[in-house]
Amino acid sequence: MNIIILTGDQLRHQYFRKRLALDPSINVLASYCESNNRISQIINGNQLAEEHLRVRHQSEIDFFQEFISYTEDNSNPRPIGIGEINTQGIINEIITLSPDLIISYGCSIIKGELLNVFKGRFLNLHLGLSPYYTGSGTNYWPFVNNEPEYCGVTFMHIDAGIDTGEVIHQIQAEYGKTDHPVVIGNRLIVKMTRVCADLINKFNDLQVMPQLKFDGRLYKNKDFSDESVKVYYQVFSKSVKSVIDKKVKENISITLVQQELLEK
Image (cartoon, rainbow, N blue to C red):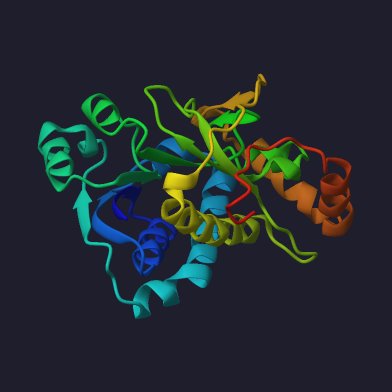
């Protein structure tokens, strides 16, 4: 399967593209890696928020840096500026490369021509379970709201909306008794990447799935505050077993969109 990856340039994005490109059945024609200058907008003067993002970055170093440093890069990375993915020059490049699939994870909102040319062959990886949580920080707010069962990943067809495309498959995060919340997130990215490779390789056999009808919670960057960070960590200052294991068992019947032939 010939694919193009549209992604960011942080460690989790580097891991994702390099790991996919190691799959012998996947040929990455190019990875457009968008620089990230959104952090200052998210922090917005909040000291605890800044500390949280520093801890998250250190955890990404612990999880991903060695793999990134010591594995071959078959992903053909092409650094671009933020928003540049929607410029006509790059659009023309992608159309000329003629991939079987485009995979989007962690880049700017895609607009216009690419959506039409690659309709049905343009997949978006959304960190969060749509439509339960939408917008920004969709794997952050479930912990603030003491709803860890809603932490996961949604694989969806992309459309002109924001996380509104038809859902293909969903996975939930996995937990350990001594976990830190950012560790849960990084473990989920590893699982997401493995399942994404499986989805790409079995793409032609995927079934059209019934879609969830639910009015979820919408969050924006401006909602990310010091107070929310306090609550986020207070949940984990209690026993992880009582907070997470109990919640997961109580909500075992949460409805997900899942392909039976894919890894869960």
